[in-house]
Length: 372
Image 1 (tube, rainbow, N blue to C red):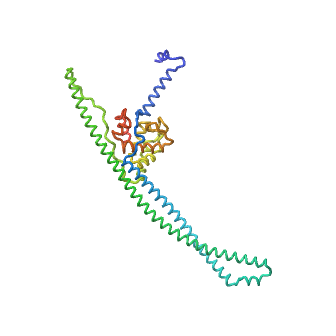
Image 2: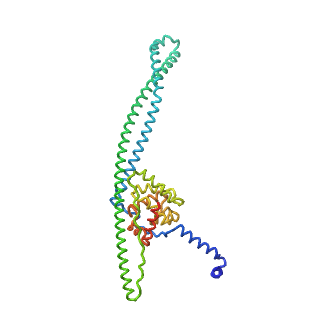
Image 3: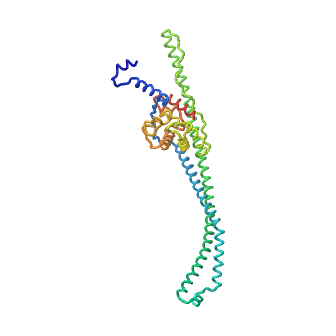
């Protein structure tokens, strides 16, 4: 083999190294890319339908309500901290104010009037010095008394503001709960719609396959009768797997949803360029009402989880689009799936996403989803 190759090459060509390189490339490709990326996505900029608009809007409403509630809670904490600070300082200021009032009382009783000072001092300079000294004492004591009044007023106003913030927090909590309920209903509606469509697709596919098998058997029988050959056993065609398991629970809030799916997706993506992006996938899935397993599974089929991207951060064969980060890319891809392909994988979405070998794409992607 080496001799034959050497006769066909120039003296500088190392046939053994070339052969080893070819073998290594074949092995690497077979391990890293279980299915060639042949996606021909056509709906990367689809407009959301009415149901999808509802899903996305309810997510925005819920996220805004939760953010506002968290802001109010932070303000409550800040107000509470100021109340505690004032309450801690108040006893000391009360003591200072008491001493100040005593000092003022003594000044008045000792008769420090302007006439007394003029009679008791020898020079104008002594008079001015004595007046300035008494004025400082008076001003200092009055300030201490005013400081107590200001602190008491601030404490009352701060406590009033705290009560108003508590009421705001209760309102925001109710708003967030209402938004969550609407969001859950929208997602459950989308999930139900997708399940019904998948069941209908599955039934239609089975009926079509059965009809095609019957027609093929008839054609084979006719051909065998004409040729006098024995009929051959029917060869099974490709089959479409059952729809994905319906184990995405939309009855929880966003925090619980993200907490459940983040570690599952992270475990699936471990060791890949997309490692650590489980939370990004989970949050996008919640925001757009998409099965959180779908986008990560497609990333394996199209780019070995981001290892072989035709365009920067494009791990899904998503047209010729490039992004500047995984976070931006994941959000855009999940949004695109929701608007152009539906809640979860289906026969119809597979035919749109990867027409050249949609059956293999569907079955392989579905198998990956079941692993997450």
